[in-house]
Image (cartoon, rainbow, N blue to C red; front, side, top):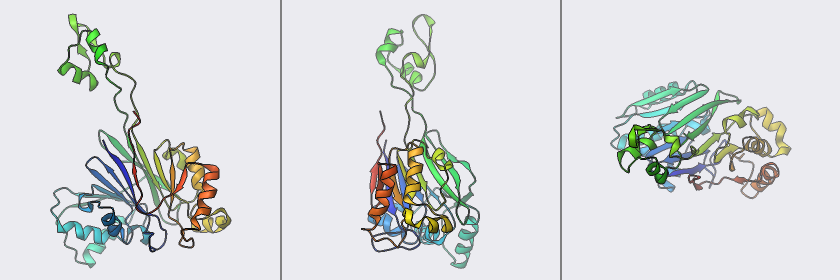
Length: 307
C-alpha cells in the first residue's frame, strides 16, 4: 500500500527559479491530496508526472496569495478531462468566496462539482483507513495546519494458532482478521485476539506553514513519519519572524523534537536566502533536531509500513 509525499515547492512570498511556492502532494493508493496551491503549482505537478486531474481533495492553509493563486488554473484545467466525482476543497473562511468570485469574474467553464468546506479545528475528513485533521496556527490571517494519519491496522494473523483452536482454513479466518469472533470445534467461541498479534500503527504526514511558534503544534504532529514545517528565517532574524508571524528554523526543529516525528523537512524559505545560504537554516535546525533536512523542490518520499 503506497504512501508517497511529493514536495512541489519550498519558497515563500514569491516563486523563484528552481524554487516554486510552498506546496506538497500526498499519494496514498488511489487518493491524491494537494496541500496549498500557489502560483505555478501546475508546473510542479507536471515536472513530477503527477496527474493533477486525479486530485481527490485540496487543503488550503490560509488566504495569502502565495498559497492560493494557483487554484483558478487548476480548476479550469480539470474541466478539460472527464471527471465524475466532485472535487473537495478544504480551507479557512473566505476560501469559498474567493473561488465563487473567481469563477464568476473569469466566467470559468467547470463541468464537475466543486465542494468547498470551511474548516475549523478538528477532524475534517475521515474514511475507514485514515483521517485528516486541521489545527489552528497563529498567522496574520486565519491559518491551519493539516495532519493525515492512517488508522491502526489489525495485528498479524497466526494460522497455527487458529488451527490449534479448531478453526479450519477458509472464510472463518477472514472473519477473525476483520475483528469478528467465530465458532471453533465443539462450538467454542474464538476471539480475534487469540489468533492475532497487537494492532499495528499506520503512517502519518503533517504540513505546517506560516505561523508563530507554539508548543501546541507538537501535539498535532505527534509521531508522524514526515513533517514539512516552515522555517522561514534564521535565529538572527527572530525579531522579523515575530513581526511577520513566521517561524525560525530553530523553532521548527523544536516542534519536531517535541512531537517526536520521524524526520522534518524545512519549507517556505524566505527569498532573501539563496540555495547556498539555506545551509545556515539547516545547521540551526539540526542542532535541535538532528533529523532535520532542507526540503527541495521535486523531492519524493516513499513512506513504508513499519511492519
